[in-house]
Image 1: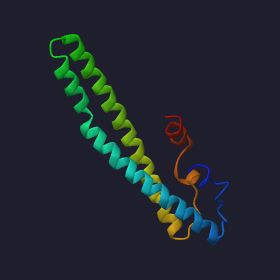
Image 2: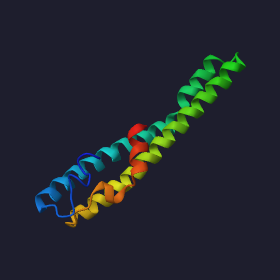
Image 3: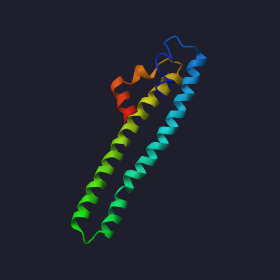
Length: 123
């Protein structure tokens, strides 16, 4: 998305055709984010299932139970962070899509700060 919707690809004086292509690219990205977000929500909701099954297998070993719980919490935290990032990118993409749909040539650079882009790409 960064490459397709950057200010180099979508300058302020972009043609209607370029704005239209950017809109459709953003639409695809929004659909993908919505799907990813729904999957992440399911995973966050069910992330304690593997932990509880591990607990039942290791019921006699207290140290294994504590380790499983810790690992389960870490997974839940990581999934929650990914869900938070997906939500942030979805808001940006929807805002971008709204502007592009109105015929306003706006790029991802205009909406998202560079630090947020780098955090999402490197994670």
